[in-house]
Length: 116
Image (cartoon, rainbow, N blue to C red; front, side, top):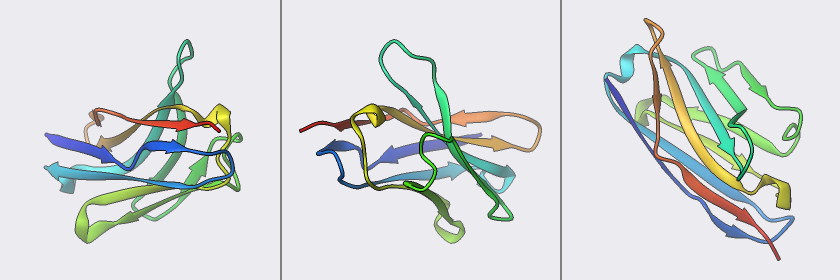
């Protein structure tokens, strides 16, 4: 099993930046795909960004050019750098990882609020 813990959320003004972190523990050697999701009130959870073991990244159109996903393998950690934040980025952000065998692990979520 893999356990995930996010951190780094908070309140930021429009145009500001935050960096989210996701630390994995457990059977992390089985992970091959790392993701960030978000869910705003009344909306479905959406995939924001992902990265694989070859460092190939993908982003939702709504965050392209503003968010950057990266990973630090020795630390079993991946990040979401969020720049030029907008009020519509306000959501509960979750990290997730996909393991060989198809299992997906989820973190508990960290709140990001963009407001003046």
